[in-house]
Image (tube, rainbow, N blue to C red; front, side, top):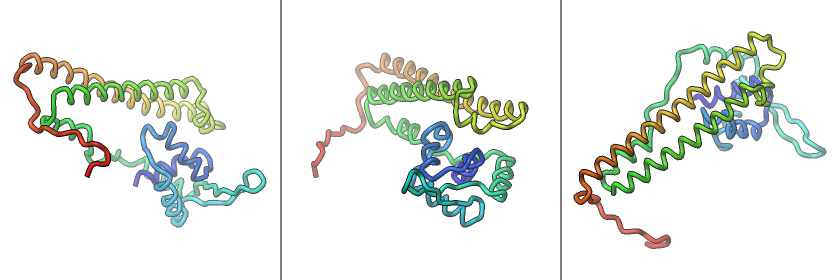
Length: 213
């Protein structure tokens, strides 16, 4: 359901084609909600059928046509009603933690690799989110500057404040994951020192070559 409101929110900045929306989900918006072309286009049709957006065909260049969608007053009212509700949270689905829990079947080196990759992933994510946040704070993020254009100073400050809060939260979430994985690596070090000559994987898995039956 949140894809619907992510699209409405994006269109509340300016009209976009399906392609442009997909680009937004691959850029800043993608830190908070990801969506593929195959998810976006059917949702656009549903939103248009519901009267929440309206599409119009425009010509790009001499021949290329594309359908551009704009939010309707009804769609804007629904978006405002949604953002005014209590926060919504996804059901718990964390493949990384499930993978880790059942790693007692593998070697401690496998767990070490898992945790090191986890640190690397969240360091990259933290740094990329910080970069986007800093562009917004410096007034150099084109999409956000477009959103605040024509608004009063108070409205502009409110828009920027909410983005700063959201991006700061994502940076802090990444830092928590980094700190957790680093503590886990230290705990794994202590385990390996204690059971250096005793630990062995519970299940021995032979490597399988690609193309093997």
